[in-house]
Image 1 (cartoon, rainbow, N blue to C red):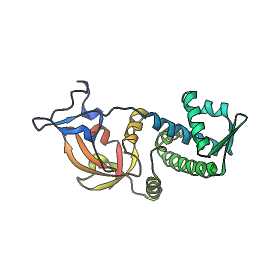
Image 2: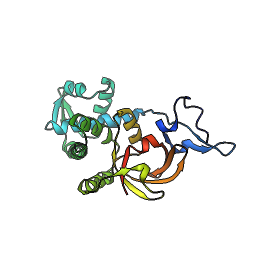
Image 3: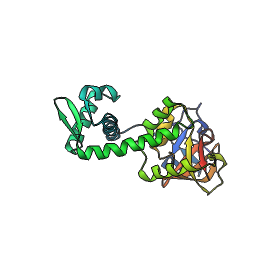
Image 4: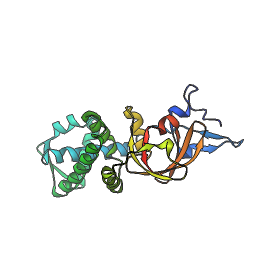
Length: 234
């Protein structure tokens, strides 16, 4: 097999993660892999900032100064301003004399966001320290659906421990129970591609130095060094 020409020579599939469309046949029938660009759209950043603002307000009894929000949300002031304006337009917050307050609709939405955050953080605290659990939750909470949250609730009740994804039998479905990475950038990249806790995953077939999985209706090629750090229940 031949791997992508865009990947530097010293890097192999074992140290990378690839998205599917990225896996395709070349002119001679060989598989070629293109590394997925690790770029976050402006609209995605805005969504994350809006959710963070609502969560912070939900944790602070519904109101906080605009200055305090800008200090806590780690993005440029212009993004915070855009997010504030968008939340006002949706009638989720009100800004009065530089004090940001949740509306009734905003309180309901903030409550759901805080609940999701706490569920994820408490789950990760079982295997990580408080700082790591909080950091990973900050990344994950913006990508998971309520269906995934329900799956995580179920996983929390299981006594059986997960196994590395590399040990899951071909074509057997599993549920992701953990992703063991200290590299937050790689963790976020995987999450953005649909690989996260509570999601169903199936190993489709093996490739040189890796496997191809189906998760969320997408095919993704993973190096073995990465796949073994993903734990699943089969």
